[in-house]
Image 1 (spheres, helix red, strand yellow):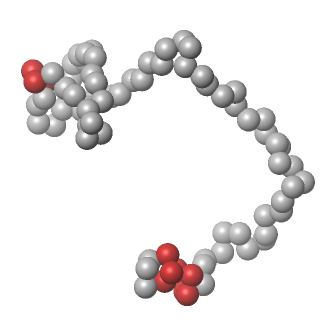
Image 2 (cartoon, helix red, strand yellow):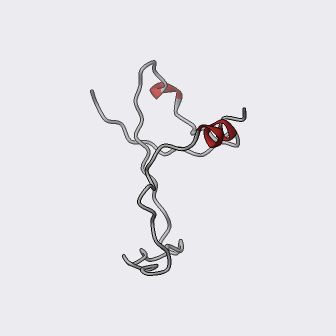
Length: 75
C-alpha cells in the first residue's frame, strides 16, 4: 500500500471530491482536517464541572421497559 496526499473539497451533497486518478475500487482514504489559526476552539471542560448537581441512579444501565423500547422503535 502506498500513501498519496492531495487536497479535497467538500461538495454540496456532503461527499468529498477526489482526483480521478485516485478513485480506484477498494481505495481507502484518511481524512485530515486543518483549521485556520483564527478558527475558534473552545477549551476542554474540566472534570467534575457538574459535581453535586445531579445523581445517577443505581439502575442507570438496567434494561429499559418493553413499552419504552417500543416507543423508540416507533411501534
